[in-house]
Image (cartoon, rainbow, N blue to C red):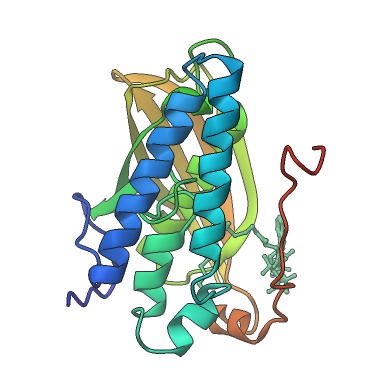
Length: 236
Ligand SMILES: CCCCCCCCCCCC(=O)SCCNC(=O)CCNC(=O)[C@H](O)C(C)(C)COP(=O)(O)OP(=O)(O)OC[C@H]1O[C@@H](n2cnc3c(N)ncnc32)[C@H](O)[C@@H]1OP(=O)(O)O
C-alpha cells in the first residue's frame, strides 16, 4: 500500500491506495468513456433504450453493495485510506475514482503550482471550447491545491475568472499559480490557464483559513444520505 502525505502533489498519476481503489478507478474510467461516447454518438433510438436498461441494471447491482456516503465515512472504517487518499480518489475535479473529474493533476515547483487538465467533448460550452463554468471549477480545484504554498490552507473566499480566449477541448491545458500576498488567515493568489502556450483564462483568488481551522470542517453537519437522482423513467 502506498502512503502519500499529499497525494495531489504529483506530476504523474499516483498509484491507488489499494485494490479496491484500483478497481474503482477502472470503473470510473469506463464511465468517463461512456460519457464521452454518449455525447459524441447517435445510435438508433431502440438501441439507446436497450443501453439505458443495461445501465440501470448495472447501477442497481452496484447499489446493492455496502454504501458509504461522504469522505468522513470513508475514512472512519480505516480500510479505505487517509483523508488525503480518499479525497484524491473522490474529488470531483481531480479524483481518479470519480468520473466527474476530467481529472486535474497538480504539483509544486519552487514557488509555483503547476497543473494539467484535458477536457473531452462532454465539457463543451461554446463550440469546440470548454464550458466557462468548468474553467472556473478547474481553477477552484487548482488554486485550492496551490494555496499549499502558503501553509495556511483555507476555503475559497472569491475566485474571479477572466476569459481571454476560448479554451479548446481535447487539448492539454497547462495551469500555473503563485501566491501574490498573505495576510494572516488570507492567502491571495493568481492563476493562469494555457492551451498551446496561449493564455486562455486567468484568475485572482482569495482563500481564507476558517477561524476554527480547516479541521473544524470535520465537525460540520452531514447532508442527507439518501439521494435519488431523477431518471428518464421518473419523467425528468
Ligand atoms: C478536514 C480537512 C478538510 C480539507 C478540505 C479541503 C477543501 C479545499 C477547498 C477547495 C476549494 C473549494 O471548493 S472551497 C468551497 C467554496 N468556498 C466556500 O464554500 C467557502 C464558504 N465561506 C466560508 O465558509 C467562510 O466565509 C470562510 C471560511 C471563507 C471565512 O469564514 P470565517 O473563518 O468566519 O472568516 P471571517 O472572520 O468572516 O473573515 C476573515 C477575513 O476574510 C475576509 N473575507 C471573508 N470572506 C470574504 C470574501 N468572500 N471576500 C473577501 N474577503 C472576505 C473578512 O472580511 C475578514 O477580513 P479581515 O476583517 O480579517 O481583514
